[in-house]
Amino acid sequence: MQALAWATVRTFFVYLLSLPCLMVSVHAGQLEREDVSRQLDGRYTIGEVQTDMRAYPVFTPAEETADGKPKLIGYAFETVDFTNLRGYSGKPIDLFVFMDLDGRFLKINLIDHTEPLFLSVFSHAKLVAFAAQYVKLTFHHFIEIHGPNDPTVHIDRNVSLQGVHRGTITAKAIDRSLLAAAAKVARAKLDPSVLDHTPSWYFSGPGGASAVPAGAVPDKTPEPVAPVAGNTSREPIVTTYAPTPSAVAGKTETAASTQTKKSDLDPLPGKTAAKPQADTPAVPETKVSAYHPSSALPEPAELETRRDQLERIQHMDEDNAGRQEWLQVWQSRRVDIAVLLLGLVILTTGLIAQKRMSATDKRLRVLRSAYLVFTVGFIGWYAQGQLSIINITGAMESLSSGGDLSFLMNDPITVILWVFVAGTLLVWGRGTFCGWLCPFGALQELISLITNAAGLHQRRLRASLDGKLKWLKYGVLATILVSLFAAPSIARVAIEIEPFKTAISLYFDREWPFVLWALSCLALGVFVYRGYCRYICPLGAALASLNFLQRWSWIPRRQECGTPCQSCRYKCEYQAIEETGKVDYSECFQCLDCVSIYQDPKRCLPLIKQTKADKTVIPVHAVKEL
Image (cartoon, rainbow, N blue to C red; front, side):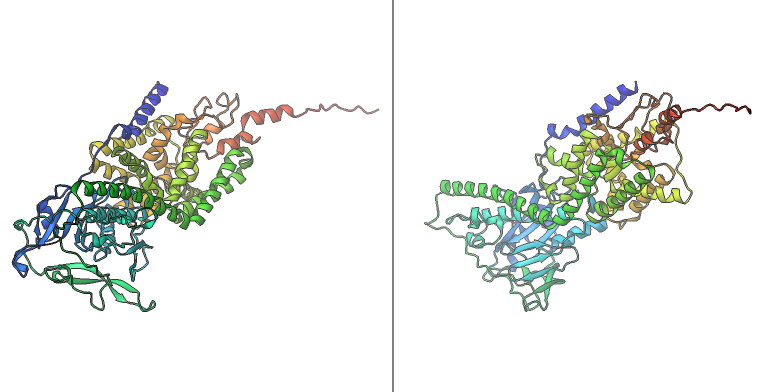
């Protein structure tokens, strides 16, 4: 009966994990014309959405122009309507962008995201601040994202932006989504002179040559419409980042928050945007040609063909840029990757030579404790290699919406660990990760070793209660997977049952409810050996449900195991050995304690009996005196 129940559960979760192959959803923008007006504080006249793309023309109100007629000053759009680039969650990040006719970003708002590390108000503000750094930048800048503690720096056309702590993939997704979406709008709507000689890859074809056809022109200037009701204040304040001078060759300017009035941002008829003052960013000026008919323009059919060619080049360049981007990340982390690979080689060697590694109890304790410290310290807190159920849900969401897994390539440590875990799942089962490579699990075990040394020992649960509690983690996993598609808002909350990002990714630097939950999970391990891992962890449940892929029963067993010997079963802290002596590999954490007992003539009952049988008995006879 238990075997049948386990087979049913396993089939159910395999079906859930393959669900993305059966589902395809489409992400679309959320904002209508009135919403766009509100995003811009009601300061401008918003035109109708364009027929060829979801971009809204933005006009200066008629009363603010010299001739009393609204003038086109730029376009507003959402990035999710133009690009499907993924964040760490596997879903696109939606930004509202207001771009002028020079390709300069005048306003950027973060509309929506599901990035797991940035869902709280405090952490969400970090992404808002990161996106705000792009205000007043243009396509004429080379943009690089540096560390979270590095200042924003402008040197001519080169810009270094301040990254986001533990948000490399998220920051890069924002960067590429913003520029890729803006590029598509600019290519279709702005004057070609704005796009010429642009250093960004978003307008470059093979070899770096300009991908803008020589005769290409934007669509016809949209007609202005009546203003949309909203805030009509004429002097609102817009927060931007203006550099202040620094002493780097006399050219470096470091970003500092400043307030810029609307008149400094809005190009009015007959004049360009206000030139920067001494303490404003050195943004290269680009003269915008007027929109007017010309007999030299290509025919519509020819223009459409050129745009189709440009679209193909655009997609090719986006893919190439994505590859170049993550290759640079892998190159920059080559030392971390080398250390991780060395650690994995050592672990693999130890598991292959399991008997030698666990020849004595003392040797096993020393080697295992040292590796657990490596897992927590290097893999977890330093290299940020904590695998998570978020990796699985992110991959599922990306695949279900027609995307791929390329967004994960910006995190080389995670990719390498997942490849290793997938391979070892076939050989040793889920225990390779859960027992050796999970930083949070390793932290629990190290705390248990400390409390044991202090005289506080974990309680062993009754076998019946332990068996029932182990089903709990599958219920948690089912809740997350089902709600992922049926109720995404519930899934976001349910995922928080995993304390990994609080304890490992964010070093407990988070809002108190999350910290309290993470500490509670660690405290549970003080009383019940690795209680969170055994009874609650959804990632452990996901790996256990795939444990049927394991092909070998690699832990050595004897005929006497189970009958009559129960030594290994009673000593197994994970209670993963059945009364028959069979190892339940779906619950085994590969601690190798049973392998150590198997070789110990003082703890293994069959070896104890064999030792006694091998002893030669010499009879003693009395010697008579002569």
